[in-house]
Length: 613
Ligand code: AHR
Image 1 (cartoon, helix red, strand yellow):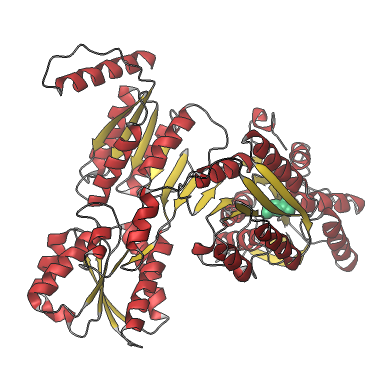
Image 2 (cartoon, rainbow, N blue to C red):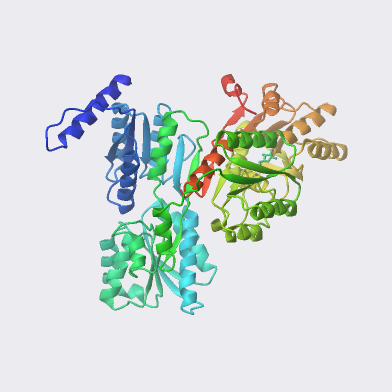
């Protein structure tokens, strides 16, 4: 591999020199990282923006070289490009796949040999190092909200929309939430789907089909270039009365931000490419830095004439905070092993990043936790970090923090508020954890006719409980062999779980095939009670749990628990990096999802070693 890389570096130097007009000595290069980039095409404007961002970011580092290949919208060529980059001996692959279905197995194979960062369109499964992309559902909702605002300003309770889509998965996903948002308000919509998402395609279509504009109040185009094409067509057809909403919101003369500034379109939704983040994380991954997330979901913004200048200013002039950073952290007080590990990780990372951390411990209720946050606001902290006990009831206090211009980070658990009220969520994908538990159970019980499940839930109203429940039930839905015959709240605690299982055993003949525990403490408590009743945990009844604490992994190796889905509590480094980035004026991703694995009896022994909790 090293020889290949030397050849690649020499090839790169030759290319660099051949590109020059005057003879140059082949410079001694200090290239350390050669990153292969496979782009589905360079015909779409946003991919050109992506390529520029990748190159601009890489240019910040003398030691980084990119080798970028364009698949010209051909899956066969993208597969060949990937093969060629591997042949070059690149250290890491960044890929923006075209046909996700076709590229998933190819990416999975590459991932067995070198790290892979997937951009924009997520592949099936988790065979990649890191995914960076937008939240397409949110983008669709934001476009719908913009249209409702425009119609409201025009005093139109009803209205008609013409949606101009393009033929892509992202467009379909955005369209779903867009249509849901406007239909809830009773707005009528007609959709057309263009083969190519280009200006000319949109302009030509509308000029050829003016009848499609009958009664239309607003056009929503799935990118700013189609929006511009619609604008040109409306000018020629004398339909300047129709308002236009675009998507992508890029900088530059042909970008959507300028179109909004010049009144060509009324609004757009930004869709960041993730190119800069990809290069930054590629270097960390190649350097085997710890705490690399599994998914980075980028933030999108609604842009109109009244905020387009401020948005551009913020992106250009990043306000830096000098000096010590003061952080208030409102955490949860329940006594799970997980929580202790989480607390230790955050405090250790604060020390390492030299951040002044004030922790408000042991909140046992929403009101208590909100009072702690209110105190941090009064103390004028630079950042407030919250592990919210429950999901509901946070709108008021987060609005107060926003009014006080104190950024809020949500860690470990999520809350139900609009995205503008927090800077980022750093934590797990709880729905996926629930799906992983259920997928293991399906494999484990494939030959069984009927499976009775006991579910031990965590703290009522908390996002891990809702997510794990939803994800588990999503996987077993439609297969009536599986029945959750008993579901009760164990509040993530061993004691509550013991009481619940004991009560069940006292009142019922034991008929449970699988216990699904939302965390290890409850799984361990249940196992202990079963043994009191001469029922063998892990044998007479299968147990699947979430967290991955030492005690649970020990029980798994003894066969008393059968599957443990990791919920990584070691969020400290990611939280402190996010805070540092924030204080340097960087915009944080909307969500930073941690990397997690699944433990079973077949898990290689070395993966149980050197764990930190
Ligand atoms: O929010 C994460 C959950 O909180 C963990 O799964 C549980 O152990 C903790 O109490």
